[in-house]
Amino acid sequence: MTTANGFFDMAAAPLRIGTVRLLVRDVQAVSAFYQSVLGLTPDAGSGTRVVLDHAGTPLLELEGDPALAPVDPRQAGLFHTAFLMPTRADLGRWLTHAAAQRVPLQGASDHIVSEAIYLADPEGNGIEVYADRPTSGWRDAAGAIRMSTDPLDVEDLVQSAGGSAWAGFPAGGSIGHVHLQVGDTELADRFYRDVLGFDVVARYPGASFFGSGGYHHQLAGNVWNSRRAGQRPHGMAGLGAVGIVARDEAEREAIVRRAEAAGVATAAVAGGLALRDPWGTEIILS
Image (cartoon, rainbow, N blue to C red; front, side, top):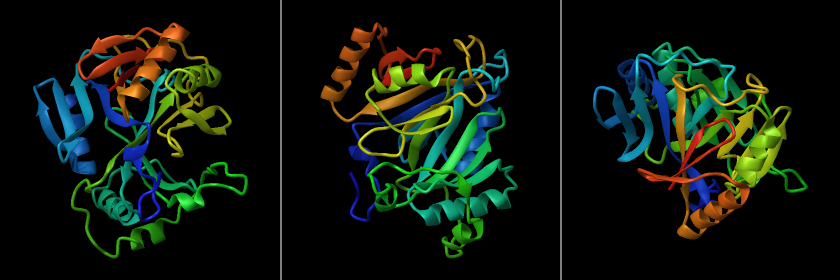
């Protein structure tokens, strides 16, 4: 599933990420952050709900409630939402933009399959901004996807932009993956692999990476901060829901059958069908 220039064709994957919903305490401040830092556009909303999109495609839905408890990094929920730039030059332009805005960054890594920059929004929701490498370099001699966490050549990345300026979230950009905090990786495998139908494409100590259609991962789950976490408490800010888009109705129906066989409840909601993972994270299947 590659494009003509050798990159992964996300639109052709059986499953991909749709809209991510965040529960926030100050919806206006968080919305302003994603607009100024990532260039997303407010599409709809009231005082307590804002939808941020790109070219008419909703990427983030923010639901505001000042009474929410702050994000607890030890709980199951969001590790980061990962925004995929179409090209390496786009990532270089964004990094220059972030530096000019003095956006605090938390890390930068070369993952072999991609190059990534890490940060967080004002309420502590993790963010990754990344660009993939061509799929021809992803696999080892045995055909397995190789992933690592190596130092990023930041200077070379910035130079890849050729001095051109960031002009907002680029055409073709998307949410490429969502990395979750879970309480147990084996339990996460049983839900995200056995029920939703993702492949386990790679493992780190304490983490599983779930891919569809040969991608390095559309989802991941780790226990690095949340080992043995139980159901996430109600009334806490953080992750509200992750949208998963099935390529066709047959793919969606297969998930429903596997959920029924595993005793996982499903419910019709606006925009699709809702399932919950073992920690209460809502998955909206459309």
